[in-house]
Length: 115
Image (cartoon, rainbow, N blue to C red):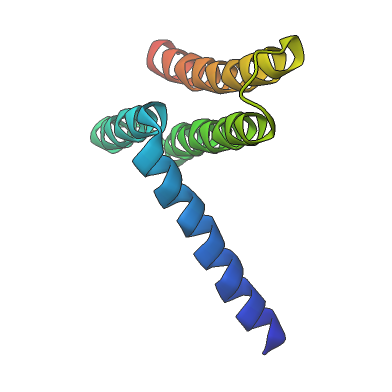
């Protein structure tokens, strides 16, 4: 029973993070819409189950990267609003992580469509 109580709490906290990020981050909302379009296209095209799974999983990976990037940015901003080279590097690395995940999703689409 303790497991289910903890699982419920973790689900609530996770959903709270998604909602907070949706409300505050234009970039996250943009990626959600891109992923919805990508998912619709994945189901509209004659793809294999494995190809669809790859497209959907990579889309979720991009959203996860954006959530982690938001966490990094918020933590850095909480610590200090002063400009600092390490703060910039942390924020830029988080942003780069999102970009790399997005590129991976794009590469998957190209490979699947071209063959």
